[in-house]
Image 1: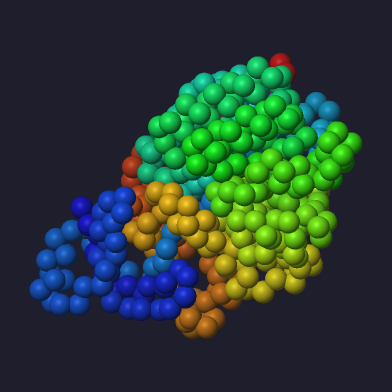
Image 2 (image 1 turned 135 degrees about the vertical axis):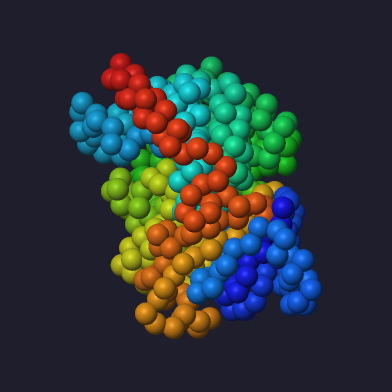
Amino acid sequence: MDILLKNTTFIEWDTLNFRTGDLLVEEGPKGSIRWVTDEKEVAEASRHEVIDCSGKLVTRSFAVGHHHVYSALARGMPPPPKPPADFREILKYIWWTLDKSLDSDTIRYSALATAIAAAKAGATFVIDHHASPNCIEGSLDIIADAFDEVGISHLLCYEATDRDGTDKARKGLEETERYLQQRQGLVGLHASFTVGPKTLQKAMALMQQYNSGIHMHLAEDRYDQDHCLQTYYQQVTQRLNEAGVLDSPKTILVHGLHLDARERKMIKKKPCWIVENMESNLKNKVGCFTSQGLGDNIMLGTDGMHSDMLRSAKAAFFAGQTCEKLDFMSVYQRFRNVHRYLAQNNFAGDSENNLVVLDYDSPTEVNQNNFPGHFIFGLNTSHVTDVIAKGKLLVKNRQVQTIDTESVFKESKKHAARLWKKMKKH
């Protein structure tokens, strides 16, 4: 069923042009949006689902450039027995302990919780980077099915790594190939310091065979560079470039903090993309992202901390005042660049009939010229009232329509407790 948004103030996501009127949203994966002005046409369209958008703003829904579904049940969990001394210990004692403890049920409820959170925050597309070393086979389907159940489009990958042995690395790549034979996705790798030459070579073969891209962490911590210099006698970006990782416009390199001018120039000349995750960087004390010398192919992610892209944009702006003196529009462009990434690579699920309705009652005027300021200092997810995904009403009056969230969270609490108990054994 199509949806009629009456009395709409519509903001074009790329130009920020404002237009008012009645907007008809067509249902379907490739559905369009169009203005209806003729009284007869408006009356006919009113037979569909009607949302009165008087006093509200409507614009393109949001998308997450880099996420970790597997961390969804970590909120509130007990601290590790030994306080991590550095970034590697954060991985070892927290995240690598958690991912080893995941099973099919905890993966499913992690994905459902993530999809629900994304929907309520106005995001209808998630690019995810998954790891579950003791539950690899079929794990991507579990996530995809959960996202589909809620109504969130997705671009998934399994994070292949040698950190748990070559057998687990092989199984990770097998899961990748199995999934790519059925659905759109990427070839996932963890980071250079846990990916040996053979695993990298096999991942590149899959990337080329399925015309995909690599999704991996890059120089998140200084150790990634140090390990590469000591092991391969070259910088991490050079290693990936020689392997061909940077040559695909579908490739996503995450973080990119500890890069010198030579590496930044190398990335700028390539079609690959960088994802900034400022809150995660600050939390892990690994550094502050700067775009200097990287070019324009930069988008924003959450790195599994949450699913709120408006929050990520604000963090990028405020920390960016110290790191690179960002302005409003630069952050907004990074926030929206995920749509450009998805469109240029022909990934499905992010068509123009993905919209968010914002009940933003500002004490000051909102217009094309000052919207970026409202985006940084005013808008937040409390203003999200309705979300439309592929022309279907996903969230109505702040309530998810596609799934019983109360039942999901009731079960997720049980699985989270079980997950935390398992983590003590690793």
